[in-house]
Length: 407
Image (cartoon, rainbow, N blue to C red; front, side, top):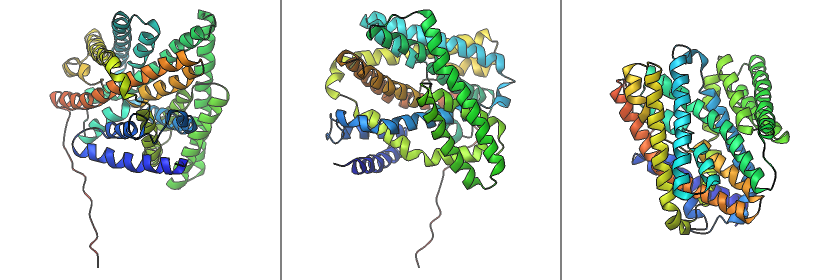
């Protein structure tokens, strides 16, 4: 089957299945990933492992837009009044999550590399799955603001920690000596250049918004600059996600038209995200689940424990309000885009090291997929529960469509 036919099937069936899951109260992304499993080698065999390499540019493109949208969520003016609370919760939650998952899985697996990588990826919180619940129920208040800040910061922390741990493991497996100086140099080149690229292209995008007045022109330019920034980052071996995250942060905080433009770009990016999650699902090897299922459950349990204990302790240390102390630990469980995206990127990197690296990457992807299916169901439900407990839900609306009668 040719490439366009595969992409067409992935988009069409992925969207249909996603909408079906949404109708029964399950996040769309779960349905889209399941489509990937069905189309992959463990299902119908339409997507073969050797063919997935051809779609890597689409994976990179999806990651670039993920970074852009995460950055766009980080509104500086909303963070000032809760700065101390957010920072202390963030630090505590990241430390506890990383440490508990790392130690728990190391004891369970006796595999330092896998425990390190899974501990790193567990730090992430899915922005879309969490924010969608907030927007759906028109939530507003200090808990809501804290959640939105943390989901953005969590992904930043994940990217930064991943830059170090993945570099350590890739160098070690590749027979290259790892030193702190080398890690620092990698961090500065990988993340430092990315920050500069994001700042530069963020300023460029703001300049274009002042030049162009029509919204159509602005969001077209925004799409082009996000892609260009990602391409430049890849060219200089910098983090594509960090570069577009900084780009989104600059654009959303210093451009009045940013929210409308970001919303349109997000809608136009849906087919790319659908393909991305289908490709993620297609990597799942069902035959590996009997041996990996226990690891996936251990990862799920330790990540929830780390998020809950770390965020709750941070809320108490920071003297946060009762609403935040009682509820923040329930709101950060969802994992999807960045977790699966970095796991997918890791698979490509490890594949370059030969069979051992590829098998490690494949195990991690399958563990993350299994855990994500659980966390994407549990996470949004707990966010809704916490928002109701905090009395920050104000009204519910059901979206309807008016039909024009045929004449």
